[in-house]
Length: 495
Ligand code: ATP
Ligand code: MG
Image 1 (cartoon, rainbow, N blue to C red):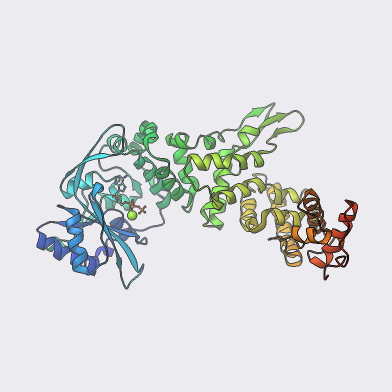
Image 2 (cartoon, rainbow, N blue to C red):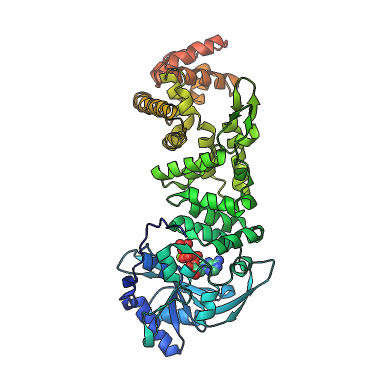
């Protein structure tokens, strides 16, 4: 197996003293009183060993998890306990002095599970710690720490999870086909952990994902996009997309992206593979921004290339209009994946629609007015757009790449100058429809929109300043051209 590239080191010394904390002390005392055994388990233990920040703590007990949770909360004087009867779980929020200040503690009774073929809903029966560890998804997620008097602080690692943490390996505790068939979401989780941690998925586990990929169809869109978003938010998201592609999972929920794959050739002329280009752009954006929606814009920026692709004699491969068609595809993709259909989606759409503009600008000389129009169209999305645009420069031709990057800097500089001078980033028309109606004493009508457009264009073209004093005479002049009469005394803006 190849060396892993994980950025984390495993340090069992981090276990030392962890059970001293008040939560685990209280959990131990209550367990003893109730005559049950209890353990910290799962992601919390994994992240403790990796020194990753802890978000939530899971505690499992061999007994009634809800009753146990309520007793521990009482012992600690913690607040309200939320009980999820259907799942047999209970949780409360614990405030602590040390970082991160507040943690969710979730309790569950140890259980065995058996699954029906067509749903994720398992039949649950009480079990031992060992049963519970076996139904966990990966060896690195099946680690437990005893909270009990006789062996408090001891790590219980029946599947060599610590070794897998050290080697950087994702592997299921039991037969991978059963683990994935029981709950196909685990296939997404495998790829998510491999991407977040920079781990490798062990061959038998990966082959089982390939064999069971179709089973992902029973998983809800929300659960899938939760994992996908974690992949996109990872430091090197391309890793995850390659695994999603090669495992056969990607096509189950994101066929448009799979369509980007491949480089056709005609008469010896090829085009770049837009799948690998897209994930390269995504990595480039990820280096410069944590913003999930900017990263989504990278994922989708060329999504319409397959649908706009043509071979034009004399010109080679073209993708005319892929930015507009791509922007129009965004709502359908977001709706199907149950992603938010709000301003986040509109942001992604806007970036997809505009992603060619900054570099296209440089094809001719970069004029103030072209820059002003870009600022006007992008508004507050301009900063994200410029990051996306730079990330999109992936040419293998070094000379071309250098030229594009130089052009990019010119546009960036010009943007700064123009914005300082003209403030068109959040353009507010200096003259409103109300002003126009009052100046000519007219009701709402088409002329008002026409006059506003003339004023906006004059400002964006740099013919007049972006202020009322400069715009008023233009309004008067345009009104007259349309046969309107100015109300006496309103020839000047101060009137
Ligand atoms: P993160 O919190 O970073 O998303 P996690 O591994 O802690 O990762 P959680 O959803 O918090 O994930 O789950 C906590 C633990 O519950 C996991 O570590 C694992 O042991 C178990 N678990 C969660 N989801 C599954 C699943 N679908 N199948 C099996 N075990 C699971
Ligand atoms: Mg967790």
